[in-house]
Image 1 (cartoon, rainbow, N blue to C red):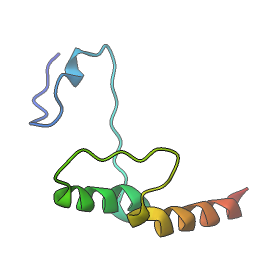
Image 2 (cartoon, rainbow, N blue to C red):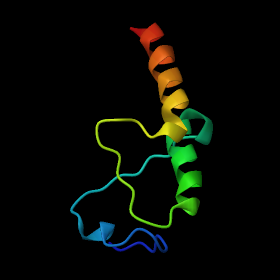
Image 3 (cartoon, one colour):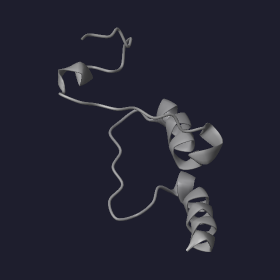
Image 4 (cartoon, helix red, strand yellow):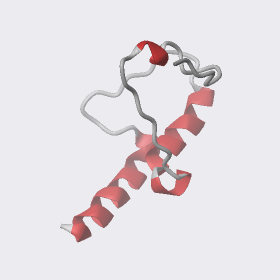
Length: 70
């Protein structure tokens, strides 16, 4: 069965199975901030073994708030 999922999904339909899930912007702040930052990137950017500076504070907040659940 084929679905028209619009642009941006490439050849995902070629996989035998696939699944997508929605996460609210407030619950995935690092990804949201990175998506905003990519507009200003003119070249290829890679971060190895470190968190990008623009999301360091948000990642730290996530780590600290998740440690309360353990």
